Length: 389
Image (cartoon, rainbow, N blue to C red; front, side, top):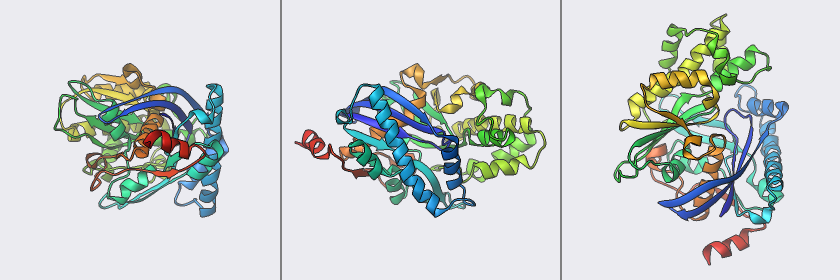
């Protein structure tokens, strides 16, 4: 099947669109990216998304409007990509849309996720494109007691296991998340997946506030090279309840977002050193998670997400991991920038075939389950005939 995966993460910088060619079924499932497209959010739209994610500023009418407006934006991005690829909507079987996370609610004492909300109407996307659309993947996992995240783990399990050694598939987006994958030769071990803590979110928020929006992130780790690490603050950050909590666990802007960054900024006049310390915090929390939770020695780390462009952060991480090879998705034939879009194409493919999209060892759910909600479109009847008859 040809499946389009859509991903907008906690950084809310734009929409990743990946057209993927997917064949087979577990354990012999194959997926490759055919073509990609990225459409950045205009500054006003991004600001409204981030405001909607802020418990002190969000309004129900704004969230309602964004649910439709983002879907129109996503649909336009799909149609633009197809036009550039000389394809039509009739060539595509499915769309898998992660949507835009607005809130991921959990009990602060237990870490148990109680509800989750990803907006971006599947109905609008299906109507505008004419392609059957699957969205709202996280909700079903939460319904069966899971964290609802990270959902990349099962696709990692299907596509990225090494023949002979354990891999850590590490994403550094707005948050950091890892999947520890057993080798193919290991027929008894399960994967383990969870959020390691903040990725780029705190660094990005401090830089945006400090530069009054002139910069959104730390290009190539340039800002973090100009300060010093505040060891006392780093120790305090590493004692955060989320970092010390046992797995399974997940987090987001609700914990490591703008409000937390603003609080930290009030504690110091040395913003450059705060940026350096927060960069060290991300790398240290990742290394700490490996030390505490990796079920076996890790043979290599496969790195993805925007954080891989932060040379300072990656060099720190390499040092903390004590010689474990740190590679990128490109080194194993995947596009790091569109890996998560590929994941949601794979999850849509599995949902369409009535197969599970997450594992209890991945999210802490009581059992595996089929994820997402299917919105039929113009190709629905033909898709059923071709798939099931």
